[in-house]
Length: 239
Ligand code: IPE
Ligand code: IPE
Ligand code: MG
Image (cartoon, rainbow, N blue to C red; front, side):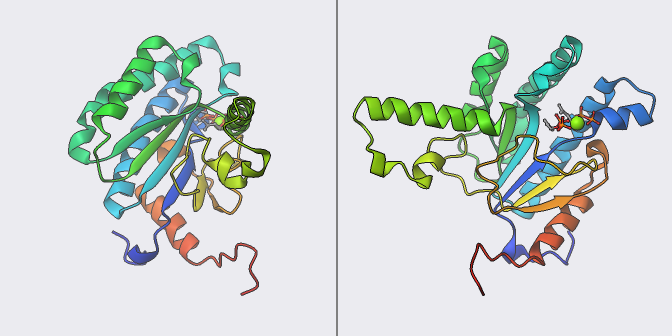
């Protein structure tokens, strides 16, 4: 473990935009799918590392609401990786990590939805890192969902206009009951959120790196945490 990390000031919640699988494969003259497989393996390594460090929440962006634009082959391939991973996660018990899938899962193949429910149920008592796997996740989509929910509650007389607060919205998105991400990491040299946690990231610290996701090492995560710990978070205050 990197002794520059102050274990008493860890980010509670880290978000990772797992980007660069395609470029990783291209560099090696391999099909994009090889990059996604390597990326999926790396996710397991990084999740374990977060658990060992004592990170409470890790959210990884695996498939966005915009990623349906990709070829059917690529989407099918990604879904097969989700299947493999969810089946694998039956071993999560020993690792003491809790799995939660965030995103609109109704649009996923039914067998994957079942695997998701099974994996969430199997890991629900784990006390280590909560791993949010974002599949068919979109920050805007989740806000639309929250707005619809509130509109329905208003219609039913269950919520008043005065009760529609920031907290009311936070309570109706996928990460309800979780702290906002303190640190958001995007490898692969892109400087954008691509619809990732747009509500939750209002005061997140960002860390960007040129490393492609399959090459992103636990030591890179450590560097991001060390940089995070040197930031001065003010939240609008004048201190
Ligand atoms: C991230 O890698 C994985 C997903 C978005 C599913 P990409 O597939 O976006 O890799 P690049 O950006 O093409 O290198
Ligand atoms: C963001 O990566 C989505 C995921 C990592 C799942 P993209 O590769 O889809 O993002 P853009 O298209 O470069 O913005
Ligand atoms: Mg990409």
